[in-house]
Amino acid sequence: MKVFIAEDELPALENLKMCLNSVGNNIEIAGTAGSVMQSLQWLNTHPLPDLILMDIHLSDGLSFHIFKEGQVNCPIIFTTAYDKYMIEAFEYNCIDYLLKPVDAGRLSAALNKYKNLQQHFINNYSSIIDYLQTSKKNKSRIIVKKGTEFLSLKLDDILYFFTEHKLVFAVDKDNRKFLCETGSLADVEAMLDETKFFRANRKYIVNADYITKFKSIDKSKINVELVLPLNEEIIVSQENAASFKKWISEV
Image (cartoon, rainbow, N blue to C red; front, side):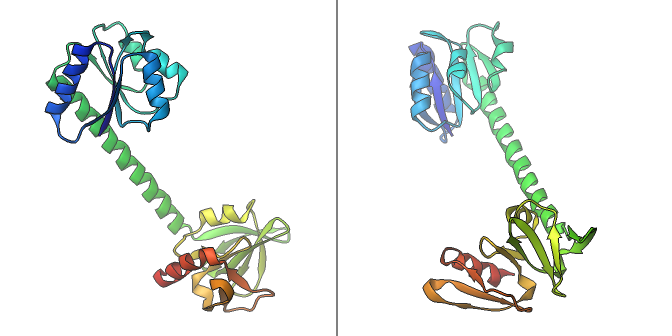
């Protein structure tokens, strides 16, 4: 964990360093500053730390000015001798508010709060990703248009999607062509299961179930053949050739 400390009083700074050292070995003090201007300069020229310990009264003013002058998107533990700023502090990424003199036990509890919050958001992020991946894989149909009618077409029945004249079409296993109700091929790609469909190039997305064979051609490009003949070849670019081979081997 990388920690930045904004503290203008040397004894308080040394106390925080001692407390951090006593809490654990996985804490690195990335930098320190004693004023608003020094803090802004450090934060603007270094990667954001994992956590900031910040005194509210710095040598040139309240540390709240740091947030008004620059973007600070990491958690803050405020350290101060005054309790009157507590409500305002929680407007600025504050996860805890420690009154001076700070002791190792109280700081340790604040760091544990940070770790618990961090784990909570990691778990939530993983849950969101899992949900999106599951919902994508569970999507089995797409709405298409044939003439004046709207149809619900099984994705399993679609050989490929393609774009033409800024419109997106789907072609099914019976070689029927349908207009998709989407703005672009990228919109279609976003709703498809990537383990089953592959964006071959700017014009085509192909279904693995209907690929009969493929072969390397000039400059390591790949020519993909489907169960039904097309008016033009489907060519995977040299840049995407390795990704295609990996994808098709894992289907």
